[in-house]
Image 1 (cartoon, one colour):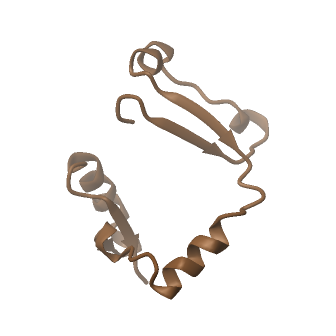
Image 2 (cartoon, rainbow, N blue to C red):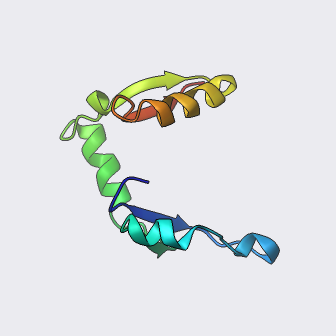
Length: 93
């Protein structure tokens, strides 16, 4: 996460999966934030999809990379190593 970034946590788990662990000093000195969300209700998502479908918002310039499922490992490495180039990677069937 970049300096000052916000980490969104969406989801619930049970048992040992319900715990998260991280370096609190690194988190603090990088001025990170952790925000929990149930993602319910998804009030704006349908509106966003409609805006994309209508052409009001063109998201294609944001897609910098496409990949197949079998190449996800390589894509994750590229996204990590080329943060200044990879904006949005989309997996294609």
